[in-house]
Length: 409
Image (cartoon, rainbow, N blue to C red; front, side, top):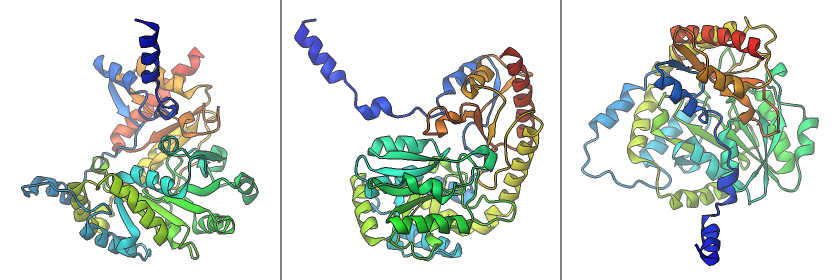
């Protein structure tokens, strides 16, 4: 190859900084190790990913089975009118008064977050996010050119929000928003109304958006209730809410979410991003629409089921010496700080070298849920999304594996 051809090859093969710098998912990046274990005939209990085993409502599945149109056509960029109107009714039941024009239906909550960041921020602007946070926020920030400024919370404190004295120094001329997940993934923390009002006041005082990821709104325990950022007085122009049906109806593959704000300028600008991707999936919107009216009946036993799963996993974790873990109040995740140095190495070891009666457990190392370097290295996230019988087996295997692993250190 001539030097000219070699130079040309090197130029055209250079990847973007985004492609090079985007984070690999700590939830999924160990799947090659899991796949190799499965080839050996080892059964894996997947506690690494929030894929519930609760059945998707039959009302949703029937839409797919019975769809009989001759053409599966484009829909409106903002989402189907019938679905947006029914979403208004759904949120009204949760004391959130909206108009259909306040809602953009998105391809899952992920797209809603990307649209929110693109609309609120210029490249290089900053968003304050309590850490540990949903790991894909890192990816969305890289995609949009936004810098995440971490606000560290701690396992010892149940991942409660820090004081105003910790938050205010993080705000500067490039800060455009505070982004929360309530109830929290990966922490299971639930921010009560008083905390949402505190964050709202900081936002109002500094003219910042609050982007509130509320996809786990139904999953709150111990007599607590969920408070939406849209239910905080005086936040009409600054509150941006992200939602999704993935966890609500155990329909992660449907990929339907929404972006909601009463800020007319914000929503009209975000619609242009929605137009650029044409429309959200038509048939999935119809399926989501079919589930709206079943909410009360559908959730009657599900919340109790998740509560029992939470209690089971937490009880089993408490049997581990020197563990740090405060019982979460929402979602379906637990972060535990383990008496080891490297949780990712432990996770790989569980998949590559350990099995108990030909079974093992996969979980997510928590370091990837932090933006601050070296935090979370000895923490893991467990998703209690399996039935109680499987969870009991998985937790026994997990504890036995940890005991064995510590003898090797």
